[in-house]
Image 1 (cartoon, rainbow, N blue to C red):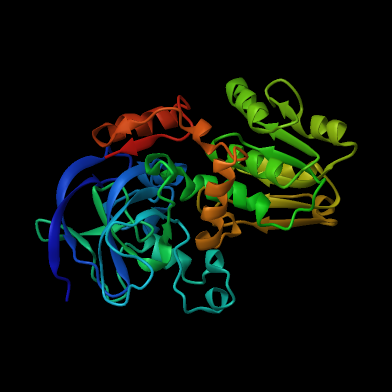
Image 2: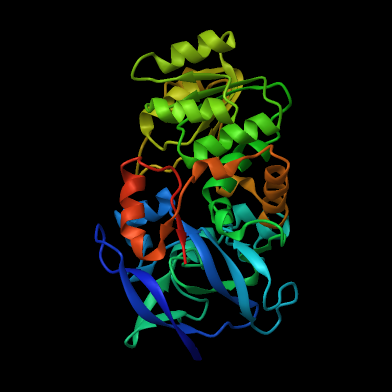
Length: 370
């Protein structure tokens, strides 16, 4: 039975393509191995926007509180929680997982076989929901719903943050930064490799930073916005291409001497996925990070795939408990300046403006502060 503990203010999505509405919702007390977190910041991700626009279709049960990039302070813990206590500073990871399936048991939580159900199902294992509005159940998102002043989350998505690090800036690590950098850093890409990175939003620019960290020899960034390409250079890209001005595949092959070893596709469009395959050298690898609309079909010439590997990537292949502290440490050393993706912030009440600015590419990674 769900016991109501408190009231929280949250941004509620009641219909697809609608604005988020701030509402006072009832929030259940943390259950076994769950943690109550007071949010300090939450970032907006393109996955939130995709959910608003209905791109996940029936996977998203409305009404729902979105948000899956959060950072905050532990306020209370449920039974069985051993690693956290009241007052701990934490980041909430997007790597939701069951801890019970074969992949979880093998130490691959980002490949959890129950990921979709946990991330998008909106409820708990017993069918109940943590959130409600006037007696009506409200779904949560990625077991987190960080577009709320308080969130109850599973212990296994919570990661400790060092006391000396500014907590407000860390929410961006939860999904976009972890996904982009992890797609490179956790893929076994060897030192000296040649990479092409398609898309220079928050995910693609994080891939650029990750490529610099691992010592890639060539980092070719591709985007239609010159200002983002400029930032890509600042973050480590050795070459940039605007496909509005040049043929991206031809230019990548010219720069790389016949093709790249790896292409990281962060856009999720059929044409850029095909281009990513076409710019490989023989036996090269494409890592698919961008997510197209559900039901999307892609056609390839057989011979373009005959000597290529195509891999999907969820959450940067990351074990967040290990990977997020690494990114924070690299940032402290000046080697991973993810704060450049979010030079400013928004008050929580300005959430619809932040979403609009991200849609229009005015900002790369909006951070909401509570």
